[in-house]
Length: 313
Image 1 (tube, rainbow, N blue to C red):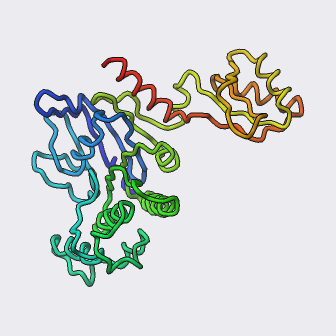
Image 2: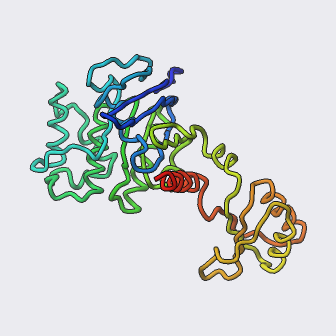
Image 3: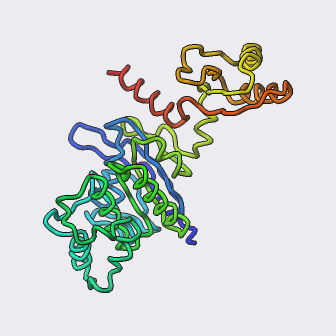
């Protein structure tokens, strides 16, 4: 695998009139990595994705994609594919014809372009000869991904790729992206679905008002969050509550555990105190049946950013 980063951005800035879309953004994505972009609406995610796809150019800063500095031309760098604001399709053409038209635009013969292969990868083989105008949002997303895969990209850039997908479709697309990353393709995706990002991404970058407020691993994000709420389900709720009440740095949240499991306990705490509670439960002979954050570290960071923006307004 190539050791050069798929993306190396330093000090990227972009304005639209008086609006600052990106303000000194640094980003590095290695090959074979699935990297998530997170942030409230207006944070600069779509602008950054557009720069990576050659749909816009930065006002200042340095951007290298697949080892090549990006110039001032509005064109996708070699080896890059994807979509922003949904894939562009011809509604009167079938799925197969859409891909054949794309292949022709790039000087490739439809018979050798690998159209059937990519349709199979995204699960559209049975709909290959249906017109795109009848496709659901999820089907259009799949066809857009097939169009991107047609170029065999080394960097895949996707904006909300799970929009409109049912659980089976989402699982299928996740497997495609995971396989691509395992083969060395870098994937950058933006999504408001925190569960998608957490299941797919090895690293995330969080943007707020055009600036990077965090970039790194999900585990690092959890470590940097001072407190989270965790749901604890045990074989002995009374003992678990007593031990939690006596654990330093832990607060019991009585009103945060609705649902059928009346024995569930919700605590607000930091990771070291949570580890201490688990050790105490084991020593007391209490079985731990479930331990999970009520809100994930990624979602907690997103909500915090959103609340901060609302406070500023």
